[in-house]
Image 1 (cartoon, rainbow, N blue to C red):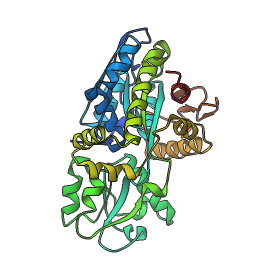
Image 2 (cartoon, rainbow, N blue to C red):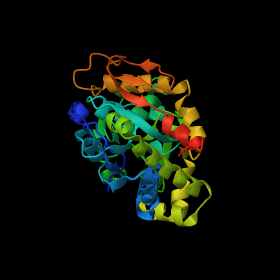
Image 3 (tube, helix red, strand yellow):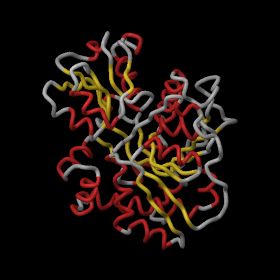
Image 4 (tube, rainbow, N blue to C red):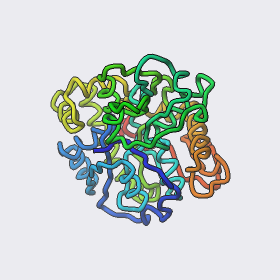
Length: 351
């Protein structure tokens, strides 16, 4: 089982640049998701019939498919096998948008607020990483978190004894190995590793709140041709959010078990996740002045690592559009859009 893995060797080197779908009116849609605390509602929506009810309301069919390999889910979306996929802001920018697939953040579901962490074996702080190797999923949000942490104490990746690309599926076993001294990963792996003797959390995503954002993104052309697709997804999502915020034990237990933990364990993970249960909060976050600054920072990281689209000449290569019409990056190459239209409909009771 893998989670938010971004195995980007020649990575998203430009992974698939074909359009993700042909824009046309249709009635059958497919979205993909992978295991992560903030994305467990998608599986529950499929299994409980919530998604079917909302799809029926609009006379369409929406299939929600779990993909165990996160990067594979994004690759398949980029290739056109799916109309939407659960992804982070960084991975959306680097893979589909960087590869030329115009993509819209339909639902801003949460941001990591402690779910991602830098963990050292033994005593020390961030400066203790100097001269050490660090195991992580290379070029993932873990890599970004490490870069932000090192920068906060005046260090950079050059001060390490390198980063060792390690699959998230192998991370717990890796931490137990004698030669591994530090790892960067995400929940539920963080929770498991922190139970190990000597595990010392040095830095986590609560230190950079609002920067690692978890989304449901969809193909922009498909959405524009099929607005009922967006309405059904958003309606089903916020019905599920209402169950969660009400503490519905059946729903939360189902999500917990699907993610490989129990209710207490899942609630602990939710505690380090800033979930936008209320669409009003999601809209406010998406319209905030901080979001463009975050995306500029993310674009600079991706460009520095050489994964902001094949042959990207600068960190401004991909344009990112925001609800007020402003754009960061190249306004002539907008491939990533934060759109609050459908979340606002939910807030207004207009679905």
